[in-house]
Image (cartoon, rainbow, N blue to C red; front, side):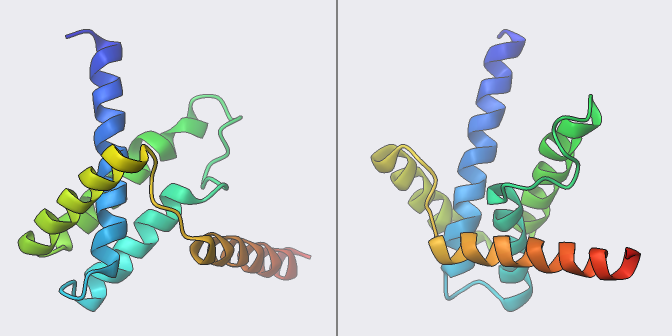
Length: 127
């Protein structure tokens, strides 16, 4: 298997697992702490603002290659096995039917508000 093919397969798994965490965060069988970690992982995956901006050579893509998969791994480890299996099946059905990740406009608005609040706090602290 070529490197580009294996990288595409890895990217598809990350995309599917992010969708799985989205479904797991909404599942009633997910405990509170794993649910919170799922929300953080999905919010980070969908956030238009990266921890390290992509225009910084090499370091800019580290969050996409290391931080995001690590968050997804941690959240997936915390979700109960039954919830994970049903959420993964729901994510597979969603991806097959919709061809895209699930969307939440309220979640996107919350992410923007969190980043604006963090920027405001940094501005106040350093100004």
